Length: 238
Image (cartoon, rainbow, N blue to C red; front, side, top):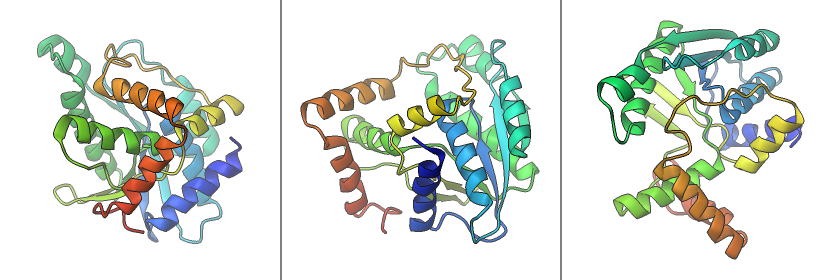
């Protein structure tokens, strides 16, 4: 996928769901993975010509894995002229060594989001951009349906009243295949996750399930996304 197409899909999501207001300072949560780096490229590019002025910064919550190397991310942020902050934590030690969580993802995500919110507030940000794409939207819906018995997924825009932070998700119109195509075409410096639970989660099971269904019935993933937009879910109204 070409960079201009990334800009186009990202801007459509921003405009459709009114994600950006004048004077916003938006933190992009950078894991080092393909999704968050694509989002960083997209927002930095859009910022140059978007009619509403906004600021950007990038934040990585370092979970404490010794193998995580962030030099390439530092170089990328410098090249894109985006301020970059690294938050050092002991989350990995707490989750895997101290508590020995059998299902570590929930606690890790909660602690990681808390550290990210604290960092962005300290740097004057009022919004945080998550790199959830269209596949994430559909996968979350199916996880909720299968494991919770309800038709639900996250919203394009979510206001967190306890922390006075607004979460935006500008990649919701991009498919994961689009993201992969983009990072390969432009040699984006993706950093592999050092987490031992990576690729061994319920989400990975659901991802594979949707892939199988979509192969058997082409277009079903797109129809699921349309069902979400038309399903009167709070926050999804166009």
